[in-house]
Each structure stands twice: as structure tokens, then as C-alpha cells.
Length: 307
Image (cartoon, rainbow, N blue to C red; front, side, top):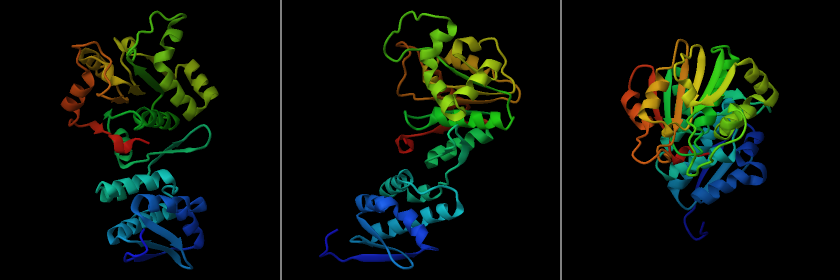
């Protein structure tokens, strides 16, 4: 900020000095994010925070963001961290601050290490709410948007609450750009490389021992999509991952497997299809054809939801 320019200033009153320390962050780390992103200096005084900058709109924007962060902190809805601040600053720079102000992190569950699992963007919040309210949810978006992890977290939450009696995770066994050839071992060993992301999510959320115990009891099942044919999946939370690599016929087969008291989440990234040439993905078609039906919701996540 140029010291020769007009300086605009805004004061925000806080309930306690401790609140100011939380908002500014350790060693003023959060304050530096406002300086880099909006060119606004954040300082503390006896009654709250003082914002200064050469652009009035930027100062007002910073004040709105800090006021929203303060609301979230006081309500206990979410801890103030650098990821949340960056998300709101980026939203303001893209003209989406009003939408970001509607975002309230949604506590889903607690993982095996006691860390709360929450939605981290407005898009993720809408996605989690869609899973909660609908029987079938399609989630399309790029890598890093939490499609699979949040779906597994919702499955674990439903399982712990005894809303379903089992979790079924499946994905098509298709390599990403290279052929692995014949793999040694039994069926489980052969499909392990394809299912590894799902194992990782369950291990993080449940812990290895708990996950293994439920797996041995048949309460958790992880298998290739081809083994879903001919089954009826009742009282289950079903996740079809990497669904961009399903054909139309496979997608129809999967959707007709869903039985009573079952919830399904279908995730994928239609920009990363590994199907052979001339084979169309069933994900985009199913999401567009069924997305507006009662009990079914289609969600599109984008680069703003990458965390």
C-alpha cells in the first residue's frame, strides 16, 4: 500500500481480545492473507480490529469477510483457518462474496484420529446436503474437490448411526492410460490397485482395525463394478467412484441394483475418461437425464471447490 495515497480505515468491534488473536492468526498469519489478497492491513486495538487500505472497496470487502469469520467462530460452526480465509478472499475477487457468505461448514463426522470432517466450500456444502436429502446423488467435478472422500464420510456417518447395515464401494476396473497386464494373486489382490483410493479413505475415517473388522463381517464391501450385476442392494450406502469410466450399459446396470432403504452416490470427472475410443461415458448422460427427478440430484463441482 502506497503511503502517499488516501488511506481508508474501518473498525470492527470484537467481544474479546482472544477473538482478535484467533482472527489474526498465529504470528498474524491470517492478517498476511488479507494483505496479499486484498492489499488491506489488519491490526488490533483495545476494542477490536482496525482495517486500513488504499482502496475503499477492498477495505469494505475485508470487513465483510472478517465479520462472517467472526460469526462462524462465535457460533462454533467452524474454526477460522487459512483455507477458509483464502476461499472467501478468492470468492470476493471473483465477485462471488455473497455466495461465499452463505457457506457454513457442515460437520459430517469425526475421523479415527478425532479430527472433524467438514465441507470446506459452498459447493461441497451443497453436495453434502444433496446426499443427505436424496436417494441418488451424481457428483461431477475435477480431482481434489472431495467427491469421493465426502461420499465415504457420509457413508460412514450413516453406518455409525445404523441408518444402513452396510457400505458398498465400487468402481470400474479400468487403468488410467496404461495397461497393468495380468496381476498375481486372488481376486482381492487383483482388484486392490483399482480400489486403493477407497481403502485410504476408509482407513482414515474408521481406523485400520475397525475397517478390517467390518470388512471381515461383510459390513463393508469393496468390489469392481462388474460384480454388481444380478444383485439387489438393500439397506446399504453405495458409492460408485470413477463413474466417468462406466459405459451407458454399465451405468444402467448399476442404477437398477439399488434396492430398499439404499442410498447411492455416483462420482466422476467427465474430463478424464479412460474408456476406449468411441465408447461414450454413462455418467454425463445419466446425470443430465435423471438429475431433475424426485429423489435424485446432480451436483457440479468446479475448480473453486478444490481443497
